[in-house]
Image (cartoon, rainbow, N blue to C red; front, side, top):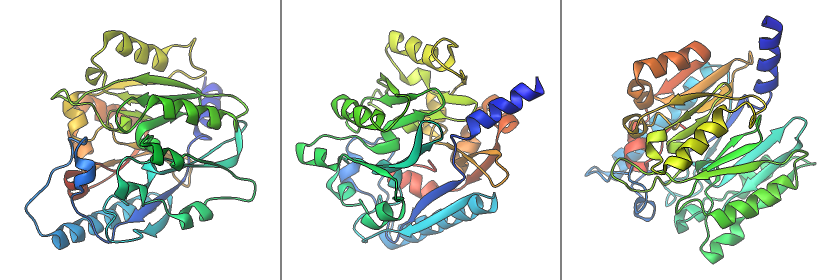
Length: 321
């Protein structure tokens, strides 16, 4: 049994990284362009300079805690002061390297909805993360057509089981997803397939990004089934997560509520530390917002790293993920 468990850990953990990239804000303020479909954003009557100073400190504190946990961080800075959402680079940029499937790093650049977010694309970051044998998928041409696919905000990868989970929304268009998957699979030895659904907040508003209500960890998938109104889609998502027939390594489903979603409990990420131990990074809002039994389940399987990013959450509508 122990040998099997160790084999499982080695097989699964090789798909998780011990190196993350962060973009530190220089200015941070409420972005009216992105607020129209992000219910988690809130405008406050506070000086923009004070808001920016709080956000910068929160970002630095989060980075320090990640580094203290033995995880490598590569830091960049916001390119220009008029790009307030630059600290969420995962929406326009992702990299993939899955041993035995994608052996050479794959760099993906995504089309963003808001003009300010389209201008976040940083050639320096793309250059630095492109290796001699890398491949690149650049989807930014879809911006001219008004079509959108916002990176790992929209797409949740399960590289062990060869799936991409996606909540269809204004930030995740099915046509662009299908085109992306065709391009992505052309670089894979084993193809991925998409699992799509639609989700809503407690007010009935479509959830703008999948990673608000869905996260793939090494042993679990965290999902808010309550946010998926269609019963057949809900059943399909549960089966896709747990079925031994549909997965090489079925995940344990950790169900969160809409209240937990509002506390950013779905917006978490699994990485490895220097000792190859799985860690989950989350905001303190999430840490305090999980139901006790859900938090205990996570603590039993992962090292938890949490930090206060409440200003970033309130103004920007995003969290630690």
